[in-house]
Image (cartoon, rainbow, N blue to C red; front, top):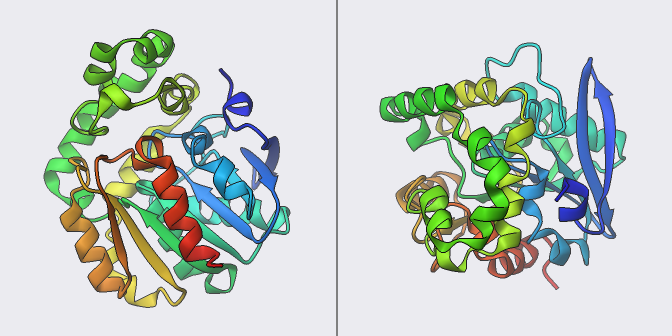
Length: 281
């Protein structure tokens, strides 16, 4: 299943930004809302959340450089170039200023965008953002192993079988990413495994993430902010969420019964929380 079919109602587009070919999706109507996926993910990760958000917002959902259908950056020692790429796409679409929702590494990119371009960001929603535990030495070692093995590229061609098998879902997603793998839907499996086979450079983003400690700059985030977390997240623990919320002076909502891939496990709860914050009625 292609990203276009996964992101029903959103139109795929391409733009060249400083020699980098970027793929993104747009759709919906209302105030601009940008959705930024995490490390090793793609725009399709938002498949289960996007329909509800598109009823009240004009969505922009990019494949980050090196991910999915976007080509890699020439140099990316920090996450700032990724934030700049998101801003450039949004500017081309006339969608600035916008509210920005970031999942995992995308949360750190959302923070970098809010700090670098305060004029461009109305509000940020951080869904299990990386950036705290990911700066520890154990995270660096784990990423080095994963980067060498490229497990996403290995399992992506098997996503149909994984979607049909509780055992395979538990093996691929269990413990670290998904709490209740038996309830992780076939559509969610496809949303998270459709892109790894075509990634061109996830490693650069990973090393940039490991080098990025956003805690040193959180006092520079001037827009409204909200933190969202899965109660059973073993990859990025809830303790990180508490620290983010405390340092940002932001409300924290913990969603029960889900892990790190909360936007795939509990999409309705995530969409409701996001909408309640960025577009309260």
